[in-house]
Image 1 (cartoon, rainbow, N blue to C red):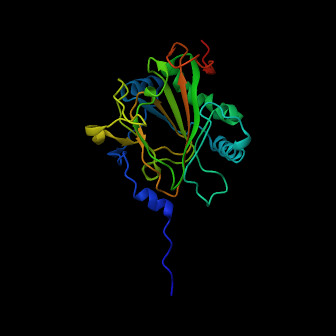
Image 2: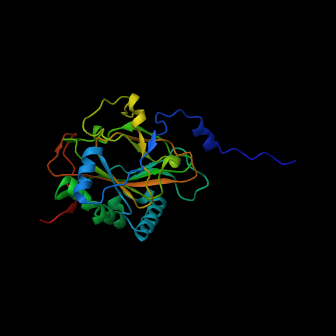
Amino acid sequence: MSQAPTADPLKATFADCAADVKPGAKVWTDPMPSARADQVEFFKREGFLIVRSALSPAELAELDGEINRIALNHQSMPRIREGFDLEPRQDARRAIPTFRKIGGITELSPAFDRAMRHPNICGPLHDLLGPVLELYRDVVMMKPARVGREKPWHQDSVYWPWQPMNLVSAMTALDDAGADNGGMQVIPRTHTKELQHYGKELQVDIGALQDQTAYVPLRRGDTLLFHSLLLHGSEPNRSDQDRRVLIISYKTPDLKYIGKGEPPPPIVASRREA
């Protein structure tokens, strides 16, 4: 007698979990403007901009190798900024530990340092922010297949110790990312004011804004530039496909530090010569 296939306990666990982030109302398919002035205007209006194929296949392959190297050796490596955050549910089928995020990535890897300074990413950022780009945050965020958790709706600047709230993050897809594997959703035009956050994770109840939610699908190598007040969130990854992204958050030198203690020393990511 044949036996019924064994259910995947990880999938079963997530299938039964209630999620604060509902499926997006639509998928953003409108083309991005190509002229620099039009890109700036689009970003100012919508709060985000997609840079297609910002990194080449060769550059992406190098970053893949670096992630594996760091993951395998993380116990002997320094904890920089946000350090290492392992997923509480490890996938026993993997030879490499399953992470939620790896922080300080640009100091752990020359390849990621080059990605932070990449002209395809920093060029549009200079148009948006000005001649000097400083690093604030550098993480590889993982949403592993079957175990990647959701991220509730929020605005990044509510967590961050800088005023005014005018930073820009560059999120580069290291895997194809979309509705099927916990890809990011945004609510366009929500970047003009700070909203009320609540709870342990400091999240926003989007209420009637649900019908304005949109997935922003990215192909591997695409970069999403988004304002630090743009509302965004993502569902759990219930699929069999990983969703890894590199997120570099950039600031300008004129922002005021409002955190505890001394401000972190400035790290210039890119400087545009006059």
